[in-house]
Structure formats: C-alpha cells, structure tokens
Image (cartoon, rainbow, N blue to C red; front, side, top):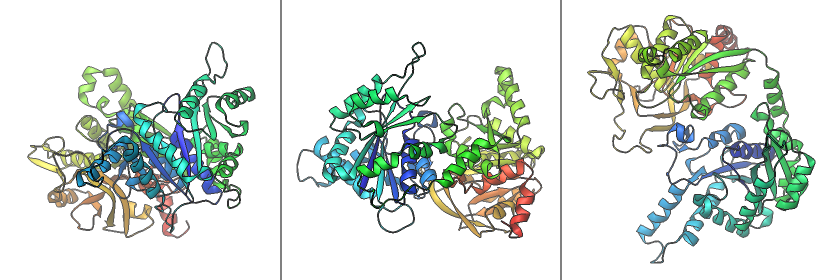
Length: 562
C-alpha cells in the first residue's frame, strides 16, 4: 500500500479536505485505485452527537457511520463508498485500546500512548486502507490520509507520532507527505508572507516528519520569489511547491494540481511512474468550465435551523448544485432562518420577519432540510403551508417531511392538536412518533442509520419516475422519529399519497401531494448519495419543477429518449 498523508498548518479551515480529495481525483485520473481515511483528533467516538454549529454537518455512510463532512467530499470527488472505519477519532482509538486492556490482551503490561496507542493507530490505518471502496475486488493502490486539525495541536501528537512510525515502517517509496499551509498577504505591505509556513514546517520536522510537497493556500497565485523562499527555508524543491489559490469553484482544484504536475511529484515519490498513465481529467475540465459559463440561475429558499453556517447543510448545498448544473442553471440559495418566519418574530424582530417572508415569496422553490428539536418548527410549517397553498415546488427532507405531514393534518384535516412526539412528548394526537427501537437515554448511534431500501407503492408517481421507474431505491437514513402508521389512512383519504414505504410496509419513506405540481417529502437523506454528473432524483425533481421542466423531463424519460 502507498500512503499520501495530508497535514495542515498555520490555521484550520484551509481546505485540507478538498485538497486531499483533489489529490485522490488526480491519482485516480492516472489509472490508480484510491481510497481515503480521515483522522479527527477529537475525543468523540464519532460526529453523531456534535452540533452542526460546532463541526458542520454529520455525514452518514451506507453502513450507518456518522462521520466528518470531509468524508462526504471524498465520496463525491472519488465516487467511492466509504465505511465508518474510514473515519478515525481519538475516541475510537482509546476505546479500542481500553477494551483490549480490560480483556487482558496486554498481558499485564503498562498501557501507554507509545507503543499501545500509536500501534493501534497504525494497525487501524493499515487494515482500513486494504478495504476496497470502489466496488472492485482487492485493496486500492493508494490511500490518502488526511490528518484533521493543525500541526502543533496537543490532541494530534499521538497521531503524528504514529504516522512518523508508519512512514519509517513502510519505507520512503511508499509514503508521501503533503503539508497544506497558508501564505497570507498583509494589507499594509502587500507582500506574500512565508514565515507562518516556515514555522509550521519547522514544527512538523521537529516531530520527525518532513514534507515532500507543500500545498500553499493563497488568494492570488504565488510569486516565483515566494516559492524560492519557501524552498530554501522549508527544504522542499521548488517544483514540489504547489499553489492552491482561490478559484471560481472547487472543481478547479484537481485541474490546478494537474497543471502544476502534482501527480508527477507524488508518483515519483511513491515510485509509481511506471504503472501510472497521464491524468485524464476531461470530465472534470468540462464540469468546471460548464459551471463557470452558466448565466441563468434559480432561486431556492432553504428554510432551516442552522443557517448561520453553510457547512451545516453542506451535502444539501452540493446536491442542489449537482441538480442545477444538470438543468444548466446556477443555484442561488437564499438562506432563511425558520424562526424568522413565525409570528413571534413579527413582534420581536419585525425587520427580520419581513425580510424572511419577502425572500420566501421571491423563491422559485422551497426546501426544508433535516434537523432535530423544536426550534424554528413553527416557521417551517408556515413555509410548508405557503408552498402548498401557492403551488410552489417543495421538498422536505427528514424533518422537512414530518413538517409537511403535521402542517397538512392541522390545516386540511383541521386536527389542531396533532404534533410530533419530538416537539411535545405528551401530545394527545401524535402524527409523528418515536421509533420503537430507538433509545431515549443514549444519544450516540441509536437512530435509524445508514442505507435502507424503500419500495415504491405505485410506478405512477413523480418520485418513481425521477428514479427512472425503479421498483425500489436505497438511500441513507438518520432519524429517531417517523410518521405514525395509525394515521396513514386518514391522511391518504384527505389527499396525501405515501408512495414509498420500507420493506415491512409500516414505515413511510416518500410522500407526495398529487394535486400539487411538486410537493414531495422523503424520510431519508438523498443528499448523501448525490454525485457530480449523477444528481439526486428528489433534488433534480425540485429544480425541474421550479423551472417548469419537470413534465417535459418525465415525458421524455417515459418515451425512452433519455
């Protein structure tokens, strides 16, 4: 196995995840099979219990793993399906070591960070890197390992030591270290400053790791004298200093790396020049240029709880992007804090209330994504009601589907007391209930998680047609509550249609309102499996409906023209 380690210095948030993903894309374009591992040095076992404000969205894998959002970047860029073990955390490592200690596996020895924790890290990396993630048999050729955080962080130290040992044990021809750093420009001087990167590399070398390549983040392209200075003080050849400057969209990053011959430097270090081919990035080039040249846009109202941080809904935003590009459009996402729509906001913050409603009314379609808790629920229901009454295309995901059901039951069935047990545990009319297998005492990994099969109940529904008339679809889930099966017949008599159910027939997965142009709710999270060039069906349907193209698309597909 060949390893490419991506570390970060100076500050966090430099885009190590996109850089690592782009390196994987370039290597894959050279004909190599690539897998990836993300190391998160925090003590949490996984990202499942972390607030979106704290760490961005929780990405869900096929096996139910709740992982860092960077694994979503890996899956989208490399078109692979990762496992929960591809995300290593300090919590997982320490838990595995302590479990062994309790079993007596260490034969009475004193359990220490070195060698026991570092050995566990190395063993984890080596075993997970051998798991195929691209649908083929046998291990990949290269494993890209991204170390989260910044060099110098206390919590990263055991991982850096383990990676130093790994680099020594696998040999120099099997290990390539790429350090991502920042080259700032001070406004007063206007000069590209290399000193922060020099210090970051010095700290890395003091820990026994010397970078083979530098990936320098900057607003503008690096000057030649800046590269020479970095080469002199960081002990890296000028040709191995890569510049990842700001670009119009992230699909340009693999092209940036290719244009600077990053693949040659990496392949040379890994002794793979003889087996690799010239990178074929025609599809990526076309994708990046197509997006740059788009002029028309579609306005999408995103009504959510965590709108203060875009990363909270990263996969939703990417799925909208994929769907819009398939329709030759640029997405124009208008973020609306759900709480700004409700009546209380009209009294407390009238300006925010008025602005939120104006934004909602100007949107071509409305999307209510997933979330937990009752904050902002009233505003989401008002958004769903507005979309239903004004025939505005609406897509509700997870919580957004449950909002759809509650609002319909209250407004159409006039059951004013119906609610979700999540918002009111004592509600006399629960239309959304707690799942029987869930745990009310333990939060982590107790939801309905991972890829589950949904069976279409009728082929003559919009969603089935968008999924190319499949009999079933497998999508990823992350929820504790579900529509109450005891109320299904009442809701369907009033006009709703539950067009998708699980294999037992008791869990409602897809909901449509046939009298509406596009009013769809899904209990699963289709955004997690959306890919560039293969947009998620519900998202594509939303954009098609918003631009008046849905009927033509469905008719065309029914006639076998697509």
